[in-house]
Length: 100
Image 1: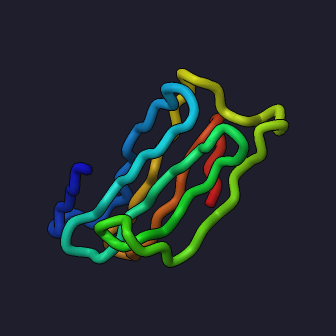
Image 2: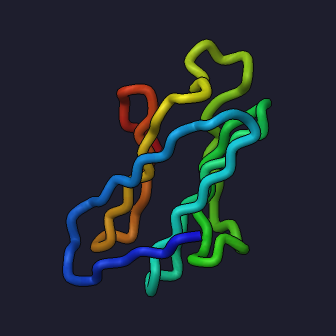
Image 3: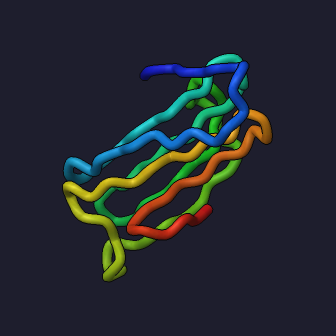
Protein backbone atom coordinates (compact mmCIF):
# COMPACT_ATOMS: atom_id res chain seq x y z
CA UNK A 1 0.00 0.00 0.00
CA UNK A 2 1.33 3.38 -0.99
CA UNK A 3 1.49 6.10 1.67
CA UNK A 4 1.55 9.75 0.64
CA UNK A 5 1.63 13.03 2.51
CA UNK A 6 2.58 16.64 1.90
CA UNK A 7 2.51 18.48 5.24
CA UNK A 8 3.09 21.87 3.55
CA UNK A 9 -0.10 21.74 1.49
CA UNK A 10 -3.53 21.88 3.13
CA UNK A 11 -5.71 21.77 0.00
CA UNK A 12 -8.02 18.76 -0.42
CA UNK A 13 -6.49 16.08 -2.63
CA UNK A 14 -8.44 13.56 -4.74
CA UNK A 15 -7.03 10.11 -5.51
CA UNK A 16 -8.63 8.30 -8.45
CA UNK A 17 -9.64 4.66 -8.07
CA UNK A 18 -10.90 2.45 -10.89
CA UNK A 19 -13.15 -0.48 -10.09
CA UNK A 20 -11.64 -3.46 -11.89
CA UNK A 21 -14.18 -6.12 -10.98
CA UNK A 22 -15.47 -7.61 -7.78
CA UNK A 23 -14.44 -8.07 -5.08
CA UNK A 24 -12.61 -4.73 -4.95
CA UNK A 25 -10.40 -3.48 -2.11
CA UNK A 26 -8.50 -0.19 -2.20
CA UNK A 27 -6.66 1.49 0.67
CA UNK A 28 -5.41 5.06 0.67
CA UNK A 29 -3.15 5.70 3.65
CA UNK A 30 -1.97 9.16 4.70
CA UNK A 31 1.56 9.19 6.15
CA UNK A 32 2.24 10.89 9.47
CA UNK A 33 -1.46 11.51 10.13
CA UNK A 34 -2.63 8.30 11.76
CA UNK A 35 -5.44 8.05 9.17
CA UNK A 36 -6.41 6.15 6.05
CA UNK A 37 -9.47 5.42 3.93
CA UNK A 38 -10.43 1.98 2.61
CA UNK A 39 -13.01 1.26 -0.08
CA UNK A 40 -14.34 -2.29 -0.24
CA UNK A 41 -16.94 -3.95 -2.46
CA UNK A 42 -17.36 -7.68 -1.87
CA UNK A 43 -19.83 -8.06 -4.73
CA UNK A 44 -22.83 -7.66 -2.41
CA UNK A 45 -22.24 -4.32 -0.67
CA UNK A 46 -19.91 -1.32 -0.94
CA UNK A 47 -18.36 0.38 2.08
CA UNK A 48 -15.86 3.12 2.87
CA UNK A 49 -13.93 2.75 6.12
CA UNK A 50 -12.07 5.41 8.09
CA UNK A 51 -8.96 3.60 9.34
CA UNK A 52 -5.60 4.23 10.89
CA UNK A 53 -2.61 4.74 8.58
CA UNK A 54 -1.92 0.98 8.53
CA UNK A 55 -5.54 0.05 7.66
CA UNK A 56 -5.56 -2.43 10.52
CA UNK A 57 -7.97 -0.50 12.76
CA UNK A 58 -11.40 0.78 11.68
CA UNK A 59 -12.63 4.02 13.29
CA UNK A 60 -15.90 4.28 11.37
CA UNK A 61 -17.73 2.78 8.39
CA UNK A 62 -20.09 4.19 5.77
CA UNK A 63 -22.38 1.83 3.84
CA UNK A 64 -22.54 3.05 0.22
CA UNK A 65 -24.77 0.63 -1.67
CA UNK A 66 -26.14 -2.90 -2.04
CA UNK A 67 -25.64 -5.01 -5.15
CA UNK A 68 -29.28 -4.56 -6.21
CA UNK A 69 -28.97 -0.75 -6.22
CA UNK A 70 -29.31 0.52 -9.82
CA UNK A 71 -26.68 3.21 -9.06
CA UNK A 72 -24.08 0.67 -7.94
CA UNK A 73 -20.79 1.23 -9.75
CA UNK A 74 -19.71 -1.22 -12.44
CA UNK A 75 -16.35 -2.59 -13.43
CA UNK A 76 -14.45 0.23 -15.17
CA UNK A 77 -16.18 3.01 -13.23
CA UNK A 78 -13.95 5.50 -11.47
CA UNK A 79 -14.34 7.27 -8.16
CA UNK A 80 -12.18 9.45 -5.98
CA UNK A 81 -11.08 9.28 -2.38
CA UNK A 82 -10.76 12.89 -1.20
CA UNK A 83 -8.50 13.87 1.69
CA UNK A 84 -8.19 17.26 3.39
CA UNK A 85 -4.94 17.20 5.39
CA UNK A 86 -5.63 20.42 7.29
CA UNK A 87 -9.03 19.29 8.55
CA UNK A 88 -8.04 15.59 8.70
CA UNK A 89 -11.28 14.68 6.92
CA UNK A 90 -11.92 12.31 4.06
CA UNK A 91 -14.76 11.59 1.67
CA UNK A 92 -15.39 10.03 -1.68
CA UNK A 93 -16.84 11.11 -4.98
CA UNK A 94 -18.55 8.48 -7.11
CA UNK A 95 -20.93 8.59 -10.08
CA UNK A 96 -20.72 12.38 -10.55
CA UNK A 97 -21.80 13.50 -7.05
CA UNK A 98 -19.85 14.07 -3.83
CA UNK A 99 -20.88 12.00 -0.82
CA UNK A 100 -19.60 10.99 2.57
